[in-house]
Image: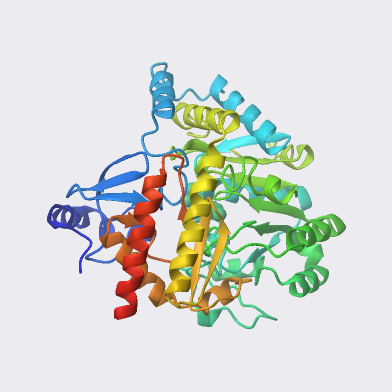
Length: 437
Ligand SMILES: Cc1ncc(COP(=O)(O)O)c(C=O)c1O
C-alpha cells in the first residue's frame, strides 16, 4: 500500500527535482511512496495534496500545541507585522516574551533564538564559558539539535556502535562530523545512577555541563526514574557543573512550567523552543542570573540577525499568554489520558505486550515488552517493526502519529473527544490488521 495519493505523488516528484529527496529535513522523508506533501492544516488536522485529511499527532514534531492555524496567534502575528518585522533593536514583544518565561518557568533571565539547535548550541557555549571547562555529558537516545557537538548517540545512531553500558562509545549519527569532536562528549545510558556518578567523579574537572532531556522526547517519551534528575542536580552542585535541561520538547507542554515544574527541579540553564510559539520559529535560552549573565558584549558571544524577530516573538507572546491564562493543558491531558487508556486496553485485548511511556501530552508506545524502558537501549529491545506496521495502518486510515515509534505522539488543544474516539477505532482496526499479517 502507498500513503501518497496521485496528486501528492506527482508533487513529491516535482519536489525531488529541486530539493534533495524532496524534503527540507531528513526526518520528513518516509520513503518514495509514503512521503507526503501537505497543503494545509487547521486545528488538529492536516490535509495532503489529494485532500486526504489526517488527525495530526506529529504537530510539526511537537510545536503546534494549540492547533494548526490557531486564529488568536495568527491574528497577533498579522497585527504585529503591520509595523515591520526586523529592526536590529529590541522590540516590546521580546521583552514581553522574556517576562512571561521568567514568570512561567521560574528563571531569572532569557535570551531568544530562532530554533532549538541554536538554543542548545549557545547554551553549551555559555556553560563552557561559565565553568572554564570543555566536555559535557549527554544521554543516549537524546537529541539536542543539529550542531556537530551534539550529534552523538542520538535515537538515530547505530545500536551496534553504542558500546557497553559500562563504557559507552559516543557514536556519531551522521557523516561530516570532525573526529576531534568525540573528545568533548561523554555519552551514558539514561537513568544509570551508578554510571553517572562514576563518570562525574572521574571527569568533573573537565565537565562544563550535563545535558538532559528531562523526558526523552526523541526516544518514545522514556521517563526519568525517581531520583535520577535529583542525582544530576546533586552531582552538578557538588562538582560545579552546569545542569542543563533541554526542554525544547517538554517546555510549556508536560506542564505549564515545563519539566522543571513537573518534576520540581530547577536546572541552571534551560533551552526552550517548539510549544512556545505554536509552530512559529522561536526558541529561548533561559536560566539562573549568574550563569545567564556570562553572556556579555565583547566577552561571550550570543546573537543572530533574526533572534527575537517580530514574527517569532509576537507568536510566542500570544501563545504564552494563552498558555499562562487558560487551562489549555488540562484539556490536552484529559484527551491524552483517554488515548493512553484506550490504547492500553486495545493492546491488552490483542495480547500484545506493551508499555505506554511519557505523559498524556507527549507519550510513546513500546511494543513487544511490558516493562517500563529505563533507557534507549531498553526501547530498542522492543518490537519496532510491529509498531511501524500499526502506525502505518493508522496513517492509511487518516490518523497520523509518526511511523517511527521513537517520536512520541503529540497532542494539541484543538483535538476533540470525537477525534480521540476516531483514533481509537482506527487503532483497533490497525492492530487487527497487523496481527493477521
Ligand atoms: C530536545 C530537542 N532539542 C533540540 C532540538 C532541535 O530543535 P530544532 O529542530 O528547532 O533545531 C530538538 C528538535 O526536535 C529537540 O527535540
